[in-house]
Length: 362
Ligand SMILES: Nc1nc2c(ncn2[C@@H]2O[C@H](COP(=O)(O)OP(=O)(O)OP(=O)(O)O)[C@@H](O)[C@H]2O)c(=O)[nH]1
Ligand SMILES: [Mg+2]
Image (cartoon, rainbow, N blue to C red):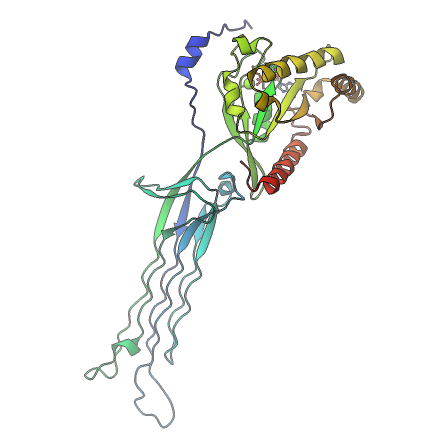
């Protein structure tokens, strides 16, 4: 296939740099119905015509959203999209009131914007940890017949039913910031890794500069365990001077806490060449920003499926030795997904450690 010629100006025009990445989902919330009032009369020995004693129902539980700093994506809503609060208990005889239904609190990451899915009206914005928003009000309780007793009506048979709880479809939107950034030469398999780890579907192809603009994916490790990874266009030597697509996309990695530096394994390549591949990216990174270059970086050797185990480990060891690399090293195949799950778990554990050190993930 012939390689496409990429022209910078065209790219800038079509893909403005101030890209917005959002995670979004719709959920349904149903508040509890109010309990109905009770129709009852006192029946006791020696107390004739004891009068009405039907108690009121309990109020239905409400549904709230609450911001929790331990969450950073909406990934948990992939599996559970419908939430209910408990209904109020009906009233009972002997003037007993029904129990109030329990509220349901749904945790969302700080920064979640909440809209009514039908009307698109903004219901609220949960910005800070602990912010709470009522999204479905529980139904009011019904009245028991004891309430309707009067001088003229001594044996009322009237009660009222509990009111239905609110039901609403909500649209949740979260602007994402990446936790982890992917670095590598064109064709290293960055977009393939993003595909393997997340449900994002960036274009993958066997020619350099397939990726022309950054994209993000949410990596879901387990319930309430997810992080965001950013795929950016490949870098080449001279990128700081604008060669290839330049380094301007590196700004999308400025808020990340970890960089995965991907190196492409190939039976035809030597440890020395891999080492040079590493330096060509690393040099550009230093020229772009010392701050970015100083971020924690892990080496990820990709395309293990192309080599047998022995060739693989000697190539990797040779390269790691030449680089005098002290940090973590992973060997994966983004294509067959071998090793990718282990990698995502290790990343999550690492990010979680950062979180406890700094108080929050980002
Ligand atoms: N055999 C094998 N091929 C892979 C693997 N990962 C990626 N590839 C192939 O390598 C080529 C490049 O993959 P991409 O994911 O597009 O690479 P990239 O780093 O995003 O490339 P740019 O966007 O151009 O910078 C594609 O043909 C992929 O199918 C792998 O683990 N094994
Ligand atoms: Mg790509």
